[in-house]
Image (cartoon, rainbow, N blue to C red):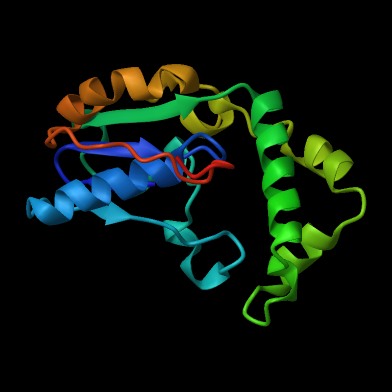
Length: 179
């Protein structure tokens, strides 16, 4: 989640370039003295669930008083691509031994070490659709503009303009090559 007071809100759907967007927006806002709130708090840190990384628009609407007056956006990536992306992420974490790190939470360790992780992810992520994150609890339109994942880099300037921030470089984080 990113909140730019009186400007914009970004609804971060898992595995849709959210960390890249957060890095770019945080950097440009900090350099230009633009107020911003960025959440990177994972869901397993329960004390901070109000600012969890992947907040639904319906939840954000309850926190952000000027919700109807600001630009709201999210990135759409088909659920099967997102499921495959999280499976690759788990495989990467296994390769680097993330589950062996003493600072890794027990919830993440259990997730990484799950033998049937592909089946578990497919079953447990199938309802985390773009609509789940961007629409109201009963399917109502909350005015969140949806950008296709494959068009993100081409439309990044448009997003920056609508967020009322200077255009900045969008890094490619959390990709196999890191570029």
